[in-house]
Amino acid sequence: MIPLSWYLLVAAALFCIGLYGVMARRNAVAILMSVELMLNAVNINLIAFWRYHAQPVGGELVWLGQPTGLAWAIFVLALAAAEAVVGLALLISVYRQRESVIAEELDTLRF
Amino acid sequence: MVQQIVFIIISTLTLIMAWVVVTNRNLFHAALALMATFLGVAALYATLEAGFLAAAQLLVYIGAISILVIFAIMMTRRLMQTTETSFNSQWVMGAITSLVLFGVMAFVILQFWGFEPGEPPFGMAPTAPEGLIASSVEILGISLVNPEAYVLPFELTSLLLLAALVGAVVVAWPERKE
Image (tube, rainbow over all chains, first blue to last red; front, side, top):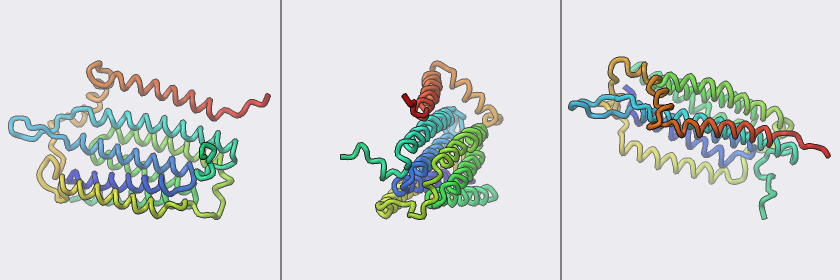
C-alpha cells in the first residue's frame, strides 16, 4: 500500500544529501562516499519504477515483470563498483605523492 | 498499514545514516554509517520485491565497496585526525543548492504522482500475476544474454570491470625507484 511517490521522495532526499556531501566535504574519500549515496538514490528510483510499471491488459492494469529496470540497476551497481575502485586507487596514489587527500589542496592543474 | 510503517522506519533510518555520512567529522564513523545506509537501501529493494538486487546490494556495496572505502581511510589515516573543519568554504551554497533541488524534485513528484496511497499503478504497486515475482530473476538472467536485449551492455560492463581492475592496480602501484 505504499505509493510510488514515497519511494521517489526518499530517493530524492538521498540524492540531495549526497549532492550536499559532494559539494561541501573537503576530504576526497568523503566525496567518493557521497557519490555512492547519489548512485544508490538513482537505483532506488529505477527499482521503484520497475515495480510500479503496469500495463493495461484486457482493461486491467497488470504488472508484466519486464526486466528493464532490474537490468539497468545491475549495470549501475557494476559501474559504481568500477568507479569506487578507480577513485580510491587514484586517492591512494595522490596521497603517496602529496601526503594529502584534501580536495582543495590538490591544485596542480589550477592556473 | 504495516507495510507503510516498515517503509517509514527503513527510510528514516536510511536518511539519518546518510546524513551522518556527509556530516560526521570522523571518516571511519562515516564509513560505518555508509554501510548502514547501504543496508537500508537493500531493505528498500526488499520492500519493492527485488530480492536479487537486495542480495547484490549486500554483496557489492556492503561486502566490497564499503571495505574498499575503509581500506582507503586507513591508508590515509594521519590526516583524518586533524581538528580542522571537515567542510569547505562553499558549504552554505552547497546546502542551499541541495535544498532547492530537493524542493523542485519533491514539487514535481507530488504534482505527478500524489502523496496519498490509492489505486494502482501509482497509489500502490500493481498486482503481479502468480509466480511472476519469483521468476523475475530468471527473466533478468535471460535478458542479460539475449542478443535482442542486454548482451552488449552486459559484455561491455565486464570489459569495464576488467579495465577498472587493471587500471586501479597500475595507478596505485608504488613508485619505481630507479
